[in-house]
Length: 224
Image 1 (tube, rainbow, N blue to C red):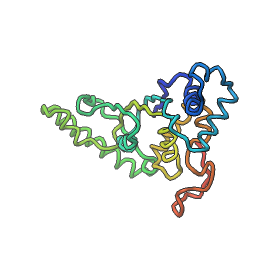
Image 2 (image 1 turned 90 degrees about the vertical axis):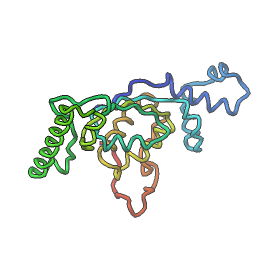
Image 3 (image 1 turned 60 degrees about the vertical axis):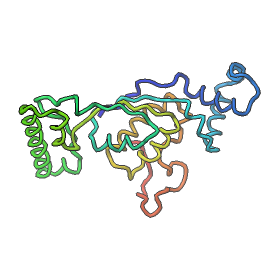
Image 4 (image 1 turned 180 degrees about the vertical axis):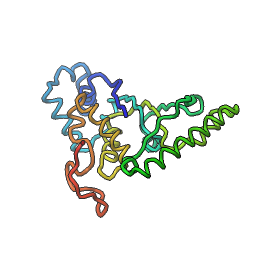
């Protein structure tokens, strides 16, 4: 799995703080920027996040390139409707003769017999897929035989507000393991770029009690 931040708003915390100050000031935009120090900017961002004034966070956007994740995980990611997605097409991109790359869950990989069973099934489906292509079946129809374990690649863009929402849900210990790994890697990519915005990004238990109630895992959260 590869997760890389490939683009983002220049000086994301500057534009967030500038936008927040603009709402409550008579000064012009250029004057607002001159009034800011690093400390005042940081304090303002912390204040608006604490107060829940998240709309100004929408001015900062981040774009990620993600490779080597399963279709299981890509299907979960695209449920975040406020983000933008571009994904490799199985209709137009044929899988080569070397066999398609796939993900084996650790719970299966650690059991020798189950791991073999899983991989044998993958190879059989791969063989059928290429038989269909060899018989001039279009890739858009041959792909119906492909399992959810097959890997894909995506480009995802989201603003800071939506990323905080994604991290809140997907970094949680109770999140599905693969999307949790993706979300944590995404968080690590942005926290150096906008450290104040993402200072407390992650599941609700970072700042208070778990919101899962009886479903809580009862474990402390970590990025590992």
